[in-house]
Structure formats: structure tokens, C-alpha cells
Length: 340
Ligand code: SAM
Ligand code: SF4
Ligand code: SF4
Image (cartoon, rainbow, N blue to C red):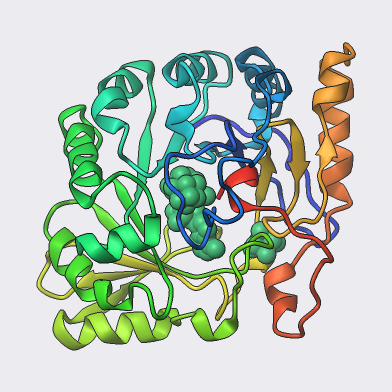
């Protein structure tokens, strides 16, 4: 954890301080996960953002640096962030100009090419998504020209580059990959990484989500505990989203993220920045606040800071808490655009 002194927190309308920034660096991806970018909706005709509309590295670092007093960490995501040209240069620049702990979420298949460069540029932490070890299940979920071995090779490259305690994220969707819960737990136990199972969420408007598709965190823990006994571990920070468990035999930890069944809106401190420079105060936001326009029209640091401050202070989002009552925004944004 960083020992930097934080500036006075900016609190939203429900008293939640701003604490984390998630930056989507591209809306493109080399996978077509069925639950995120289904090929029918993200096919050859899909219009991805043109390059000129993406925030430049200079713009991204400027924004991040001016919020650095408020932030505990920054996470780079996408789309697939390693598809953004010269991403290690952005990492180097963010570390130099914002000086914050920096994490990256990736599907892993480009890590053999980039892991060493990312470590050298100062990236602190890695999260790799992996929804199945079984080849057929993996391919059915990801719908791309890559196999499980490409992700595992990415993880090995990350280890060789010095990344330890890599988080492995698995989204569990009923009827697709519940059969993979135990194989994944068995595989990653004792390897020093932290496997985390995530409840499938109704992000965006293209994945045809139904609550019947959600496998609850409680039932995931029960399944694992039935074969590999678990005990709960205290959360390190109240804002941590994962409930943690350790294997009773000392072979490591596993986590569950109960985004649907036990929402954590009450402690949500995340601001999201889309690849084209829109700020979103919730993963389920229907609209964003443009920051690219002001940046490109010559706004001062003070003006940009005030824009973010005003936005955060007005924030009342608690979508997941309201989901149960079926209060949904009219049009939600895609995860690949907004960043997970
Ligand atoms: N492409 C990178 C990856 O897959 O790790 C980064 C972006 S991806 C949108 C970030 C994370 O969001 C991934 O772990 C992915 O599994 C998760 N995700 C995407 N759609 C989701 C959904 N509907 N429910 C829960 N998690 C989801
Ligand atoms: Fe791509 Fe990640 Fe979405 Fe899968 S979850 S389609 S890898 S952005
Ligand atoms: Fe935060 Fe919105 Fe998720 Fe609630 S639903 S935890 S406010 S991102």
C-alpha cells in the first residue's frame, strides 16, 4: 500500500470518498466473450472508436496526476488494454507523473509479449481474467482464436517478469462455466496467485442478462468448501470488493465478488474514465461526463479538478442496491467501452 499523504477526500452525496480510478484505454478486444462483446453485436461492422477520439497518453497522465492526491490506486482496463499501442509507455508516464500504485486487468494472451516491459515500466499489479481451464468451455465463453494455453503462457510470462500474487478473475455464468469452479480452485491453489470468482452482472445492453444466470457467491464458496475446506479472512480495506477465504490446509486464498447478491455500493469509491474521455460514477451509468472536450479546449488544471469534484459531489449511484427493485437506467453502456 502507498504511504503517500492523501489530500482531503472528495465525498459524494452519500458520503462516499473518491478513492480509485479505472481507466479504459481502448474499446477494442481480441476476445469476443459471450457476456461482454458477443460477436453478433461486435462483428466486422462494429464501429470502434477512431484513434483521434481516444484520450492521448499525455491527456490521461495529466488527468490522473491532478487527481492523484485523492486516489489510492489506478487500474488500466478496456476492452483489452494490451491492444493499446505502446501501453508500457503509458505505464511509465503514469508512474512518473501521478506516482500512484498502478494495476492492469487483461485477458492475458498478450502478456508473453508485454509482461517484462510492463514490469520494467513500473506496473505494480496484474489481474488476469480466466473463465475456464477446459478448452471447449473456454472457447465457448471467449469465442476467439486463442486457447487456455495462451492465457497460461501469459501468466507464466508475468511470473518470470516478477509479478507475484496475480489476481485471476473468473466470471461465473450459469450454464456456461460453473463446472470450472472446482478445476480452477484446484489448479491455482498453492501457486501464490489469488483466484476470485465474480457473479455475472447485467452490464451493458448486449449480453441478455437474466438473474437466473447468476451463480451466487455463497453457492460458489459452498462448492469449493465441500472439497477444499475454507475459512473466512478479514478484508484488508473496507472498500475491498472481494470476500476473502483461505484454504484451511494453508495452500492460499480464494475470493468471491458478490456484486449481484450482496452489493457493495455503500463503500464504492470508483470513478471510471472511458477510452474517449467520459467520466462515469457507476459501472451501470447510462451517460458520462465529457472531460476530453474541456481538456482539448485548454481547460486549466483547476478547472478540470473542479469538474471532477462537482461530478463526484453530486453522485448518488447505487445501482446494484436498487437492482433488486428493478430500477434500471434506460440505456446502459457496454463493459468493453467503459472498462471493467
Ligand atoms: N479485457 C480485459 C479482461 O478481460 O480482463 C479487461 C476488461 S474486462 C471488461 C474486465 C473484467 O470484467 C474481466 O475480468 C471480465 O471478465 C469482467 N466482466 C466483463 N463483463 C462482465 C459481466 N457482465 N459480469 C461480470 N464481470 C464481467
Ligand atoms: Fe474482451 Fe475482457 Fe470483454 Fe472478454 S471480458 S470481451 S477479454 S474486454
Ligand atoms: Fe459502485 Fe455502481 Fe457498482 Fe454500486 S453499482 S458498487 S455504485 S459501480
